[in-house]
Length: 387
Image (tube, rainbow, N blue to C red; front, side, top):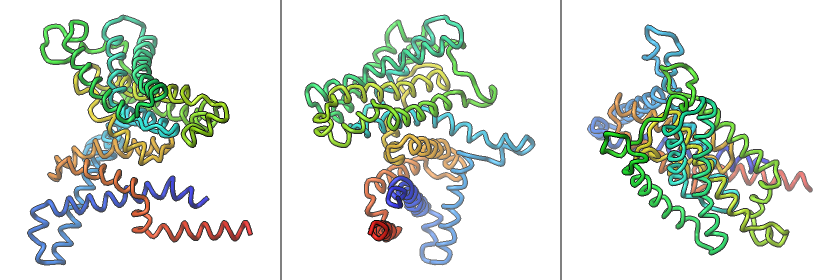
């Protein structure tokens, strides 16, 4: 039991704390004021602590709560940064679930970026091209994005199942194809906004925009609830459904699953199609809820960040939700950190990379935090109990 808690909870937590610590050292040792005091150990430590503390305080204020925004207004006005974090969290959750679901079937979905793009393309086209009642318009536009992305993801599963093509190579190549295809679409008369030469599509109609949760002053919309509902669905699919059992069986041992009568090919294709649909839903709600218009940078780095999110979340839906919120906070707060204290926003990328590094090296984290002793004690207690 302790080992399970260790693997699912403590390791990701300590990996993140370790990344923050090392990231703080990077912040300190790249600051000229800190380096100027290096000859005086006490002064050096004081200014190092102050610099790192101010940087992380700015990160918190930019991601969760900024008391300066509440001055002269209500206390709740200070939570505007949290609303922006929630905006970035929703598509990250969906893309992270896309990668995590593939993990469970023994597949590595690097193609969430391309699938996100196709989801955005489908939602954008239906959003600006057709007139429908509001609820129907949102549902049809989202569904169009899901179908396109599911087909794009299904191609990977089909190639893997029928030809043995490695899904990592295939998804990386399809990411490039999706990005270039998006550029092509935005140069055609079907997508390019009239009177414009730069790659931008018409804005989606008002009836296709996701409803805001807290009025026009806040961008957070029902997309966050759609993402959370998707996380609950994936949990149910993996843990309470026959299809999910087959996915997990194939991921655990494909040869044994085949011997037990499970179609490994069908499981691979279905997994990648559903994974594609999840990432495509992320692209759809991002387009319909925040960006409103398709551009060549619509996907930003959501699909690539999803890999880190799935790793930090240990491939579980709850872990993905928490990791998505964390990474969205880093993304949003990093801009405030740069504006307020002059720390380069690239430091956030360093912290994200460090998280991946420490998650990929669990033995290192265990040794640093003496977690191995806890695990050995748990094993001895289990043996004693069984004896």
